[in-house]
Length: 482
Image (cartoon, rainbow, N blue to C red; front, side):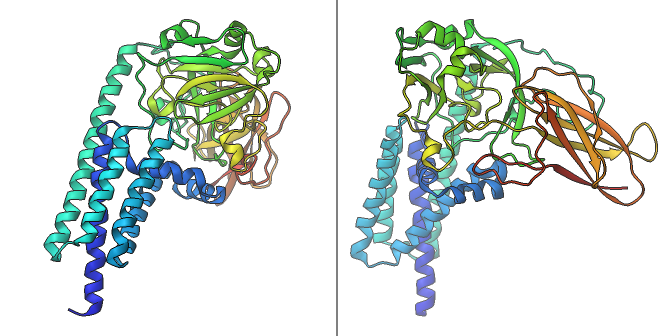
């Protein structure tokens, strides 16, 4: 065997050891709902430069979490190959260092799991043993790789079983709002148009967690603390007693024109103004810090929430049912009109009233401190031959301008004049509004655009702007072939 073949075989053996180590660690972590790969992935998200985060979101879209997991796995295996190429005396210390680092990351998180720490230790043990005596030949390499694959399959099964148990617990909670009530706006006959209310499984998901925290609703309590005269500690059922239903669109700060990182929900929540009346904020309280059970926080100016100028809510339900884990079960804070990154924490555990000394997660990453408001936006869902008259084209879509509401939607062909579209019935000023227009187009290729005008008089900005640092802008354009 040549030196080149020996090196190639050694590299494959080390890669197989890496697969086995990650698989064993992941399976042990999954026994209690943890994840070794997710723990490392979250740590990576917390430290990588914002341009890297923005590029990952733009390239992977809704698959950003899967892309992060894949990147962590590939990097872990590549690191194993690199360690395997080092002298024998260095391999074991580096393997132990890996385990210690992964365990420390697990302990750093507020939702730390002993199983994740145990998984990190086990992964380090497999790594050290495997690299000390590398797999011999093809069979040895396959044995390590198969062990890793089997352990990953076991971890997947464990997570699936825990998810199924959690879903059964959610079903026992019961309805949260008017379950089954389907609103109408007069545009139900338009095929291809987005639903008036977005189903929970269709609503976009965006957060820094690779997996939702597992929370037992029977033991969960929301604490309202800090600079208050009367601290509160409320159960899920106690919150639901004072909840009201409202319609509102939620928009991700990364939602470029025409993309799907926006959805319209029928939410069920307790007005923050009501909660603040009960606790009585003390002098010096200027910010409301919304804290997730894992320590992540988003803060909001207190006064506009207290006065009701900003209608904020502690949301416990969506579309007549409890929040799904991906959308923040058992509770999240939502201020209609703010981008999702600024509207409040999911998996809420505490509301703390404090002064201006608090620093949010995203402020540290370079995003502006002031809350970012969603700008008016129109999306074209339908561009098809007219169904009423030959030679016409039907355009339809959704538009939003929270919190004031959509006053009008206009469409144009090429650089022509803007013409008004017909609007569906409005669910509420913070909700999105469906629209429809019919245009006559001669044979050929045409570019059509749409824009929104809000009730406050703001006209959608047509200049193309990337999401960072103040949110995207521009018109959604669609090319139509007649």
